[in-house]
Length: 84
View 1 (tube, rainbow, N blue to C red):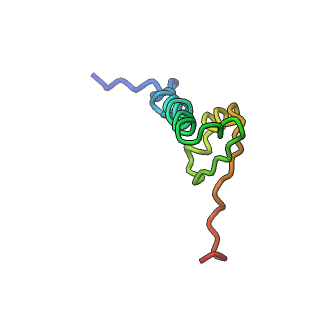
View 2 (cartoon, rainbow, N blue to C red):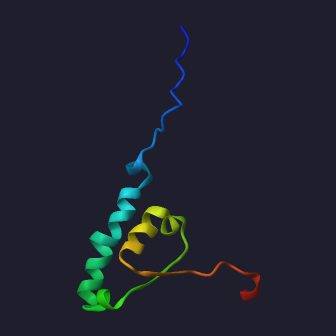
View 3 (tube, rainbow, N blue to C red):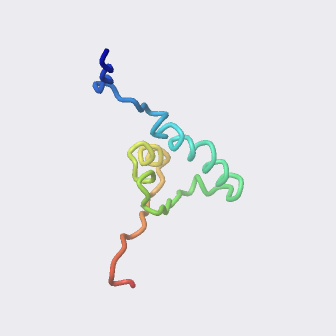
């Protein structure tokens, strides 16, 4: 009566587990409506999206969505001992 080995050929975590779907929907469901409400006309004139270089902000799923909106991405500069 041995223990069965788990099937390692399949991923335990799918898209929803990683949060891809959530992070892809944030710009559409929260960010764009907030910009439209607070700064009418700004979406048409172009957005410069400045993010903190967090892994989720650099994720392909997120950058593809933002590129689809034609937003220019400006990442935070990396840490340097020159600035401390």
